[in-house]
Length: 506
Image (cartoon, rainbow, N blue to C red; front, side):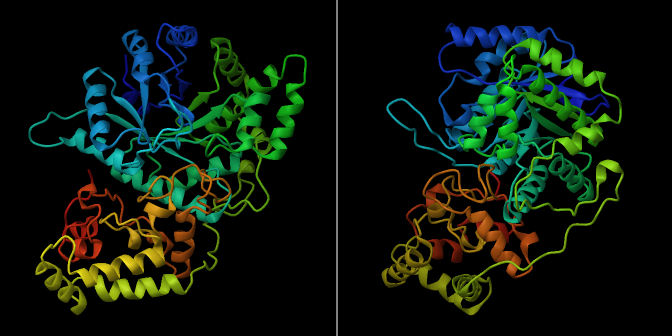
């Protein structure tokens, strides 16, 4: 049997199926149903791998390995979702060693959804690492974590959310995907969306950035009227169903079969579009019975080779003001491949300009104030805090300007002088998560995504391409509560280590 890594290197169009885990033990009725579905999928030669979620939607569920073991032992490739929302870096490393020991070598590394449930109320999120940091850690394990440990053989997957509305959401997603690939991702699955033009853009972006060799798997979720309502409500982070598509799904849901025939054909058309665009495979979600898989694949096989071009124009559910990286060129009819659209000027402000100026003055290595600061804090009674007057000045100014949380390992210059501790629900230091909706954070109370705002600030300077040049950043929690000024001047934080040629990855 070929491994997933070997399958991805072949020329055959592949199919993966997503199984959503359940809450409860393996003997409960819901788990038994999922196990029954998995057994049928194992016996389907058209299915190349089965993917199992990790606390999907931020809810507590059965660990994916429990459902994955019978599938793996039956001879089918399994992809385990590994997310950062519930485990810190030590627990993630421990989980990775366990996966490797049990024969699970395919990992889809994600930041994860913000928790919404838990015993006794909502769980406290972790987000010690993000998807970039997790991918970097798994890649280091593959290369030999250190001299004491054998190399793992993880086939590391990444997810990208390309179906975004605003420029400041779309472009950072592309930049973050590049960083994920640089850090070790070997295949990519896109988030659920229903706009073939965006799917074509994603493929074109990778090709034009010398990443066309990375296998791209297209997400084809089998909708129902109920699922469409859920997605349209915004309760599933990052998934886009437009009002126009929702109305279509509602109408089909009122048909005699509840829309089953329509939704299966719609998913088959998505698969055909991915095949036509040159994706390496399709990833089917929303699967509750093997008959749906069989019917979707049967319909897709019956299409003519060029039918996908018609379907691409049909699956075009965009929103007013939708940003596209490339201008429209009727590509389904063979239009020319366009260059990216002309850039517009971004937005900044006095606080950003002042922060840049003071940071360059105080923390540029070799400058007078940087050398003077290092001498002063090194001679202080507590070099981790520095002199009391200077520490008081740091706390006061950063609290007023940035709502500083005193993390001690500051990422303000990495995020265009926006604080990921106080202004990002997931403390994202390596680019945006996939959970924004029309530029807003998925978590109430956080407003516009800080990475959208950071992109706008950098674009004002014509430097938006440098947004993630710093990544990967892994915060040193040992510095929490200490002076970030002192830590930078004395070379203890991630920025100083990176400047000195150190490895910021976990």
